[in-house]
Length: 171
Length: 171
Image 1: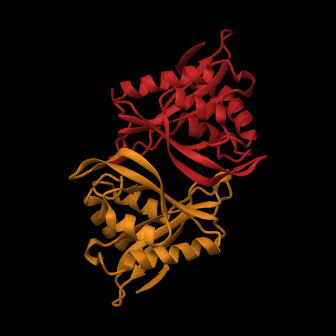
Image 2 (image 1 turned 120 degrees about the vertical axis):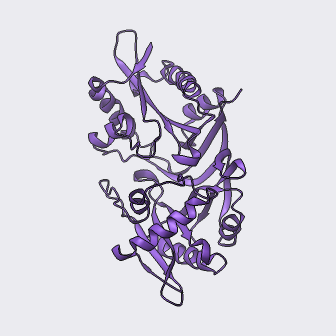
Image 3 (image 1 turned 90 degrees about the horizontal axis):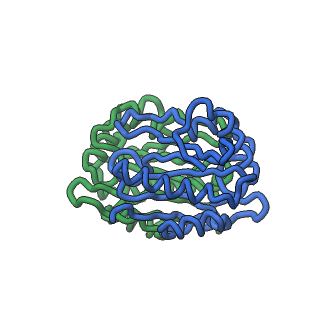
C-alpha cells in the first residue's frame, strides 16, 4: 500500500468510498444521501484560507494493484487561537476493511501533522459504537477526553454516544 | 432588556461587539484581527442549508435605552445524523459585562432550542479560564463533558484548556 497526496483525478474514487461509508449511517454524521459536491468539498477543499491558516491536506491510499481504497484529510481543528491543534478525517472502502489501510493512514497522518508543526490532534466526533475506530485511535496514542451523550443517530442502534479523542504531538 | 431576532440593520452593532470581544484574545479562537465580513457571516449567516438543516437563528439583546449590547446564534452542532444537538454562540459587549445580558440570552436560547425541537445543546470550546462563562453555563444546567488540554492560545495566559459543555433539553 502506498499513501500519496490526493489529486483531482481521485475525485471519482473518493466519492465512491465516501458514499459507501456514509450509506452505513454508523460512523459519520453525514446523511446517507449527501451529494457528491459536498463529499468532495469535505475531503478535497476548497478551504477558506482567508485567515492565513494552512489549507486542507488530502491524501489517498492505494492497494498493491494501484486502486484507491481510502483517503484522509488533515486540517486545523480551529482557525486562529486554536490552530495549533490538528483535526483529521479518515475513510476506508468498506470492501478493504481489515486491510490495515486505516492504521497506515493514521500513522502517516500523525507524522504529517508533526511535520506541519501541529502540537496535538483532536477528533471531535468518534461514534462510540465504531469500535474499530476507537480501538485504532487508542493504539495510536489517543485518549477519550470527552463523551457526548446520545449525540449520534445510528442507523440501526438509535441514539448512541460520541467521543472526543485527543493526543499530544509533543514528545 | 429585550431580546429580539437580529436584523440586517444590526450589522454595525454586531461587528462592534464582535471586534471588542475577540480583541481580548481570551474567549474565542477568532484571531483579534478577524475581518468584519467573517464576523457577520459567523453570527448572521449565510448558512449552508443544502442538507435541509434549519438555518442559523440570530438574536440580539437591547438594554433599556434600546442599544444592542449582545447577540447570540443558535444552529445545529452537526448536520445530518447529529442534527438533534444544538450549538450556540454568545457575545456580550465588554462594557455591559455584569448586566445579566449573558444569562438572559442563555435562558432565551435554551427555550428557543427546545421550541425548535433540539434534544440537547453542546458548546464545543469554552475556554477554561473564562470563568464567567463556565459558571453561567453550569448554573444553566450544563456539565463539562470533555477537557481539551492546552487547546487555546490565551492572549495573556498562554496555552490553556478548553471545555466541551453539554446539557440535555429533554425533561
